[in-house]
Image (tube, rainbow, N blue to C red; front, side, top):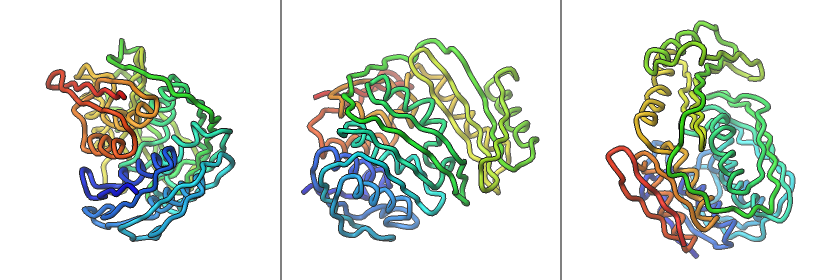
Length: 339
């Protein structure tokens, strides 16, 4: 049985989710201790427990320690079973992170799966639906996966109430992919989304984007959907390049000014655009596992985050792969995955 220290590296829920995903794929049992030990509220929160229960259901697994607040967990997987699943977090916890846990195993499972996930779809510290739709899933498709995701209801923090529907066709054979450069920029889009909030918030946000990035108003877009149970707001900056699309997001909160929301997204986009890296910080973290499953791949990225370096170490515990990080210059690193 593999033993994992849940407090090492970035010490968050990513360690647990990657361990669950790889346990389902490899059939290797694991025990994780000190789960989220360094966080303000250690142990399993609702969204982490939903990930554990989802993985256990998909993989016919036996678990010990699967309860709110638990700081240790034992997970022994059985055979992954494709099918129809409904996972409800019950809070604004991230639906995309729950998906991240079970998606790799279901992509290569022998059959199609349909998932309904309820909870948060747009909240801080988790990839929003736009990132999933525009940045991550198109690259998975290029590698050979067949996955479609649809946003049914927005779910903002703290109310939640969001809903995603995901179809995973299964039987995917992932292929090696290299992303040494992003290529020429083909399109930029600054989108401000408001649910049940005054339109002037979006105008203030887009003014900041124009000021910080010099993106003209013809690249601006305001959306006011009504399919949300509670008020919410976010800014999404899309950079569509020849090789991939990157998405940078700022999330509105009750105590944060509209200008600060836009500034958050603009700073991340500007940092990416100022480099020659193909892949941004968050996408780098997401690509590691599928490339490891494909047996190889590489990309250039910004200086690796602790999330990325921690994820690398977890992957190595389950798979016999080499993953190297080499600095090309002060703004670009190259990460290479191989056998």
